[in-house]
Image 1 (tube, rainbow, N blue to C red):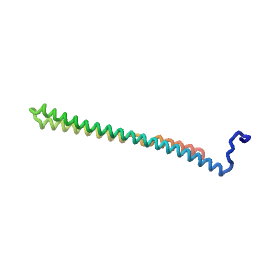
Image 2 (cartoon, one colour):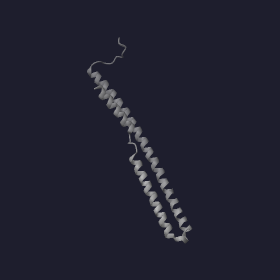
Image 3 (cartoon, rainbow, N blue to C red):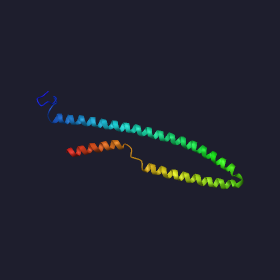
Image 4 (cartoon, rainbow, N blue to C red):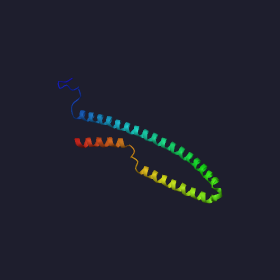
Length: 131
């Protein structure tokens, strides 16, 4: 140890640049690790959403087909074409509403890698403040 209580780090401009590059490398490595973690989380979230969405669509179509057949059988004497027309309009309305909600959800979704970009913005602000 030296008299000032600091470790035996080399002095000079070259040593300062070496320390700066070393610390910058460590900083970039931690940011890349954060981005990799966020990428994995985003992929897992999308896979889960896709799976549940496909299962919901499949069973929803099965239920819709069964309901249509049931209603047509129940109201056969009243006019089966009228029942089918009403059901078709109902299904089209529900489909349009769901498409609208899906579009809004996609439009208002947070951007991917928000935490990583926020950390890069903080790093950039610190570097600008120092220079």
